Length: 440
Image (tube, rainbow, N blue to C red; front, top):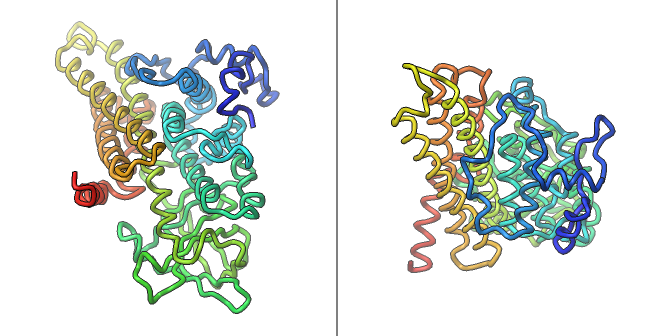
């Protein structure tokens, strides 16, 4: 793996990074990373935006985190932003680019180094994912889901599972999908109906279907929650499994037609008498719901930080547009109404970023209120950042409604963030429940 927690600063100093090299793939060169850290990468998309909308976004970060951010941001500006509109329009899933991101260590950010991970924390990941989402929200959102799957195996998997799957997942030789939601089980995740019946030889037979699965049909590995004990309380009878794409009985529905997130496939995954060997059970029987919820705490931070990155791009785009567009004889950004809107957007963006990083630190520290912190950050950041994007579209006027400008794509991609990883209504339920539990 390219960089490690302990060796990152030295790696940055000597230039151990990967940058585009004129069609020869990604090369490790000293000059390349020096270019990254100096911020020499040019913005090849239609907007040559600056980071001025978030000029204090590095405040409070360690030197190492600033370096993570610069490498991720350079990758986003070079490899994501120039292609984001086309990927959205053609519904292209950029698997090769995902593997390039994995070469930078972004495929298993908070997994053990022994299995190809980078051994970083949740706050480190939040910084990286925000920078990547600035270039493409949909791409980064899938990458966060893949990282969540890696976390599940890294935390609960057996040695055999880690050697067989995790090592190949962190480098994204194997892509992965997370299978919890079902057609009749969304917010009430514990009511899932997919069954896993244990056989005499210790294997399990899976039957059921999972809905809204990102990467489905392309991903190689599926982390599946299924009910092994129908007589137990809803949450206590669920177990986690690793299921491979090519196993007999695994099938996929037609790709969903979606408002946004078009650069990743989404469809139903069906299990029809799928035989899963005993060694593919993750954790103990009945631990599946606990595993799912632990994964979702981190997933909520991830999707919130994707919102922050996307909103930062929207704000930078709006600032550039309003400074160049003239009406009534002067640029739009000289009107007080425009200035007020931009100021409110910048304030909401800063508040969202602070909440996300606070939640990430809480999860890293394993404090008692971490679940509530993650839910609050997810609820606040996804709602606020969608509002930012929507305001920025309005500031573009009629041009904001056209696909020639990025504003409408950002609005579409961010809209789903208040729904997935637990709807924001469920976030409020979690926050209230945790307040009662913690007697806050």
